[in-house]
Image (cartoon, rainbow, N blue to C red):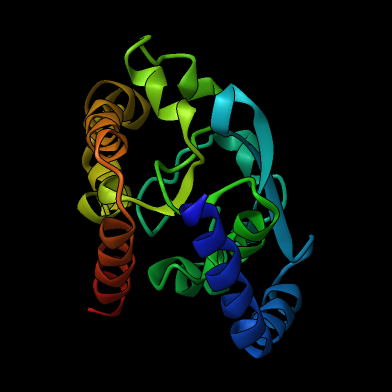
Length: 196
C-alpha cells in the first residue's frame, strides 16, 4: 500500500514537472518520421495480465515486425531522434503514465513481451506476482544490453539462454526482500547511470 502511494505521488509529480519536455520530445518525434508519437506495446504485467506499455516512438513505423529485440544502437530500424531518446532513456518517460494508472511501479521487474514470458519456468514466473517497474537491478546491470546482443552470433538465442535468466534471478532476489528504501536507492542509481 505504501509502495503504491509512493508510485502515485512521485509519478504524478514527475508527469507535471516533465510536461514541457514531453511536449518538446513529442514534436521532435513527429517531425522526423511518420507514425504515432507514442509507441504502445503489449507487455505482461502483474498476475500474468497483459497491458499496454507506453514509450516515445524511437523506431520507424512497423519496425517491430522485423523483430522485437533491438540489436545495438546502430539498428537501422531506429530513427535519428530514436538514438538520442534511447541513449538517455528518454523514450521510457511515458511509462510514468503506466505507473500513475497502476499498470506499473517506479521500481520492479521490467515487463517482458509475451513471447519471452512463455519461456519462464514456474519459479521465474514469481516475478509476475508484483507490478512490473520502470527500473530494477537488471536494468542497471544490463544498461548496455543492446551492445551485448550486437556481439552475439544469434542475439535472440543469447537473450533467452543467457541474459534473460540473469535478469530474472536479480528480479527474484528483489521481490524476496522489498523495501521503500531499496526502491529509492535503485531510482537514484538508475538516474546516475543514465547521466554518466
